[in-house]
Image (cartoon, rainbow over all chains, first blue to last red; front, side):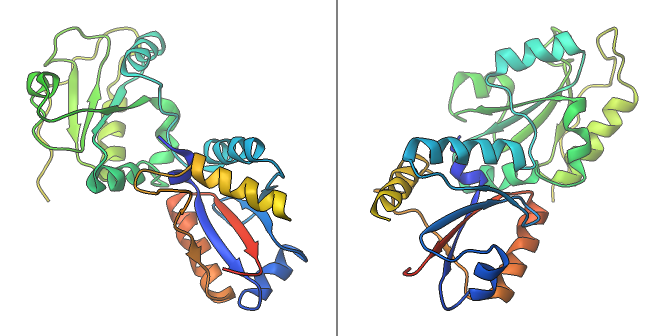
Amino acid sequence: MKASTKVNRWLLLAGKTDAVWKKFGVTGAPTLIFVDSTGKKVGTGGRDAAGLIKQFTETAEKYGRAPKWAESEESASGDAKKDAKPLVVFYRDDKAKSESAEQEFSDKGLAELYDKAVWVQKTIDLKSDEAKKLGITALPAIWIIDARVDDAKARVLKKSAPKGATIKSDLAAILKTWKKDEGSTEKPAEEPKKE
Amino acid sequence: MKKLSLAIAALFVAAAPAGDHGGKIAWTHVKNAKEYDALIEQSNKAGKPTLLYFTMDG
């Protein structure tokens, strides 16, 4: 996933936004400034392309409110087992609905649970055998899994809806009964409520 | 000045999201300071940082 989708890009033209220029003490152009989500300056754009690209990625990671997405489903599953945490799998494609659902993971309320679970995005083709095997017929789909459980059905604790508040409440409910030292005995997954 | 402009162009090509081509990344042109404040409020809700590009010509 490109960092550019996680960082806004705003152009501030001299003569129209002079108050903002003054606020940041900008006296010459072009000037690049990175700000966090509250508008606080967190960096100045460098003077070389490679440096700028690196800054772009680092700013997205450091100041963007999002779960720390695992590199792959395999590594996420391994981490979830090792740390005895629920695994949140975000099945997606590259369409607008999935892009929009990704934003839901930046929900302020959900942020307090980022460290309580392992998070991974999995791009999947609905026509693939894998999707058919999993029974995924629409994207995006968000599953909360107990990676310690081998049984394909029993390991799925909840199929959540792509809304930040819903993911939060579903995950919080699972964490309430979560047992660190064994596979969860939660009841089988329920389908998300249709909105 | 020219060097920075080239660097910016390279950045936009490298970091362009799907659908953007040739470094022509869509920028949000901030109309005035009031709109800037409103955009910051939105970015705070979305938890997104921002790259501000101060320029003499858009």
